[in-house]
Amino acid sequence: MKKIVTAILLVAAGAALPAVPVLLSGAKNTEKQQKVVLEEYVFEDEPEDAPVFSDEPYKILDISSGIVMEVPVRDYVIGAVCAEMPAAFHEEALKAQAVAAHTYAERQRSLAAVSPDPTLLGADLSNDTSKYQGYFTESQMRYFFGDNYDLYYEKISSAVDEVLPYILTYDGEPIISAFHSMSSGVTESAENAWGTAVDYLVPVDSEYDMAAPKYTEEVSYEADFLRQRLEKVFKGVELGEKLENWVVPMEISPSGTVLTASVGNLQVTGGDIREALGLRSADFEVKAEEDTLIFTTHGYGHGVGMSQYGANTMANDGKTWRDILEHYYVDVSIKKTGS
Image (cartoon, rainbow, N blue to C red):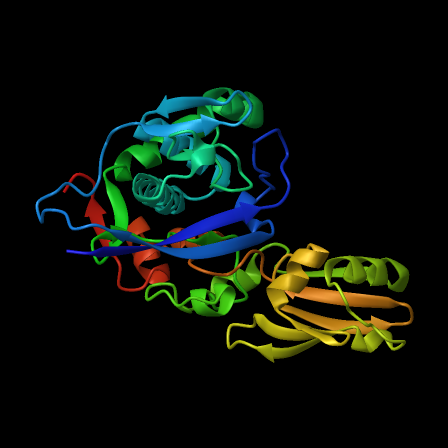
């Protein structure tokens, strides 16, 4: 049977440590600007009883040394959760994050087996957080958590141990386990965010996010700086004299994402503007005041898949990790690895 896999490549901007993702208080590294590339890979025919998943160590390329490390699955998932979600979050949210992180790694391993990336030198993925999900080694965890290392490591490792056998699948394959910090109140579809529809990455309610810290943020750009930035990013743009016409949202999705906008004489996407200006999300409004353009954003991240703040609030309300994952990833299966 032919098996088709759609790959996701997350590219996050900025880092707090060399090859270590930013972790803000109550936030996560994939809140940063992201580009997502969706590609399709086709698996050749294989026996129906062939094992789909493996408990073999992941091969991780250390980009600083060029050495391919073999990292046990448990260690990798613990390191990914430490890097991707605040340790202060509820245990059930941490479990949901662990399953998402494990699923991401399994999917990447499958893709690397089918279509190897020569730059990985035979690895499944690397610790380059501009291309792959965050991952902390033990030394990085100790540095990041400081005096709280023992407390947080125990909390996260206990959560991981409870769900380690599980990943998320759709049609028998690991899913694109996209996640973000907080949505606008409704998550976004993969189709609107990235231009390719994914059956299980569709809008779902996440109204909890609207009460999250810094849900609404405002950032201002003076005209001189903004002109320089827009002309640098958008080649051939003609902005004109009226500041209020420099950036104008046009088409907006039901979830609030700016799908198209005009930048002077050009039509671009909200994601293009988000990337160009370092906005927290592509859900934004724009107003002009004197010589300044003011952007008001809602949420943080691309808005697709699991909202981490939503997951934490659901957990605080008594929902389990299964409830969280089944809410944010529609019609997926929770499957044991090796089965």
